[in-house]
Every structure is written in structure tokens, then in C-alpha cells.
Length: 243
Image (cartoon, rainbow, N blue to C red; front, top):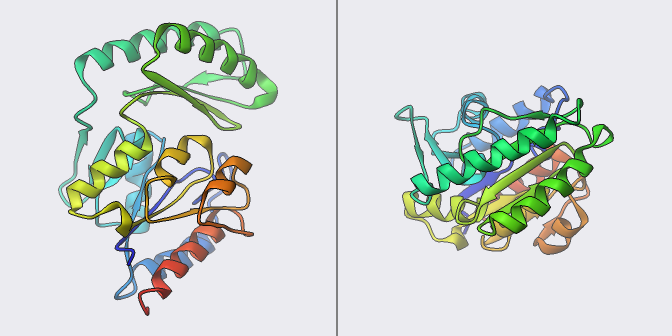
């Protein structure tokens, strides 16, 4: 039985740089606040402030995860904490990676650093503005100098994430915090950064707009896009509980 449903944000609840589909948000919110349904949470690569806002928008009452699970926000207390693996040594390495990324990104006017993130190196932009070219430079540097970091990407972002601070680690941290087993958790994601988490949960889902490798590794690959796929997945795990 699924006791906690966790959703990514970009590519799942909303598409980057596009207006929120508020009518569909209303449908999802009605469902997640119905009696007897699994708790609903978030695990996003987005920075703290964005995840806090989405937590408030959806009326979530359990902790949510930001920066790929490196941070946890508890709306009931208003407190945010970093994962125990985010040590001072890792923090220093992140600063070095961010400095290198700044040099690369400066050569591509269409890209920009995401300075809101504290636990990873992050940049955003459009692929036609040089994102994939910058990605290759950054990945080569990280593989040569910081083997304990992983480089993930979407079509609009690059994230260099410490090993031990992936979404899988975040969801394990959240499960332990809530006293749940991984089998009791469902997760929906759409990119390669979500795959480690999708591999460890009891039920895994992907929207139709997800990367092909992601759709191939989940229990259920939807024919619906973004938030419609989230609603479908949430109905599926809810219906198994007779709600």
C-alpha cells in the first residue's frame, strides 16, 4: 500500500517557463486532500524558495525536498534542514564547481547560473543557446576533478550534484524521517536525475513527456503529459487503497 506519493515539479507538475495549468492543479488538490488518500510530497531539483511556494500552493502538510533531496522543508514548523551528507568538505567542492561553471556559462549569453542553489552547481537556459555545449565542458571537468559528483541535465538545465545527495538519497532520508519503508512510497519523475529515485521506490511513474530512458525504467509510463500524468498516477495509487 502506498502511504506517500512524491512528485517532481519541472516536467511533472508544471513545464518550465510555461504558465501553471491552474485548472488541473485544482483537480489534483481536491484529490490529495480527500480522506484516505496517500500523503503528497515533492522532490525537486529546484531551490528552497520555489519548493516552499509549491508546498504552500498545494496545501502539503508533510516535509518536501528541494535541491534534489539535499534539503528538506517542513511546512508545519517552517524549518528547512540540509541532508547530513552535505558536509563542509562537500560545500567547498560545490563552490569550486560553481566557479568553474561560471566561467563556462559566461561564454554563452543565453545561459545563466542558478545562484539560489547551495548544494550543487546549477545553470539554466535553452539548448539552442549553447546548453549542450556547456554541458559537455562541465561534465568533462567534473569527471576529471570531482568524481564524487554527478552531472545531470534536462533540456533547459544542468545540475552537478554530489554523490550521496541525489533524489534517491533524499527520498530515503524522507522515508526515514516519516518512518516509512521505500515500498510504501511512489514517485513520478521525467529526467535522468530522477532515475535513481525511481529505481528504489515501491511504485514508479513517468509522464509521456519524460525522457525515453526514464519511461523504460518505471512501473507505469503514462500516455498523458506533465500534471495530467501526475493526477493519473495519484488516482492509481489511491484506487489501490479503495479510495
